[in-house]
Image (cartoon, rainbow, N blue to C red; front, top):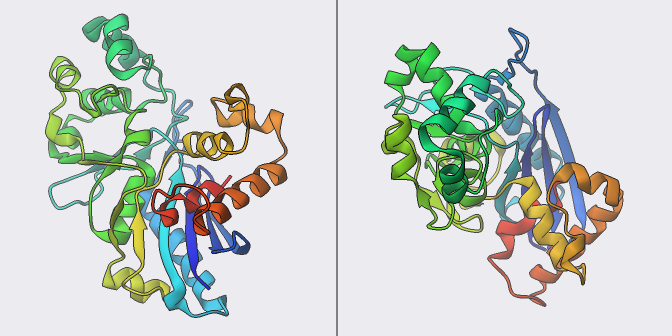
Length: 304
């Protein structure tokens, strides 16, 4: 029997799910971590907490797993959107991550409109300037913490940073990158135009990969700390809202029922029904009864 692991890096906890090739949930573990809210409207987290709690959850999962750990073939991710993690040249974290629900950047959103223009921004990024997105956070750091901004070598999104700590490789994938206000969505590249206009070096933007892409295997250190094998493959993953839509699209005959945001989803279906749909989806992929985009990479669809 083969197995895969899904990691959902949420705002309040990381949830780890082990699934077998028949689509059955074998084990589920959750580890919580705190929010840091120093001022009204501020919402931050220590990225090291994500790594620590994920490591604990995976170690617990492996320790209680009754099968052969060699049969756990891959890991992939879903997670909280838009958060800003800044790394220096040594890939050390420069400050706490600023999360998606942080609202300090109203001024920066207006500045983006003033500099780029509302229509031009929408044309390039397919998004309006909202406080939750990543670029306003970058500009806030540039204005209020210039010494931090000057040290920054790359920015990352939360689940992408966690994946980096598993593999030692830095990437962003397209579904997460689309929520930064820095991606030219049509061209699937970082927008040099926006970077130049707002004064953000394009070098700050990480390399881009597809959500289903295998980006490597776990490091020797992470294997030692969790009990997983060094051959465990790691796949990029995607935003929870995007992967839920993808899963439901395979089952709902009319696309109009595929909702656009996760919050709406909870009103349309109970989570248990969603879980059943997603498990069936994974099962079909594993049994090769539908086109597979490296089935291991899509296990994250069951994390809802």
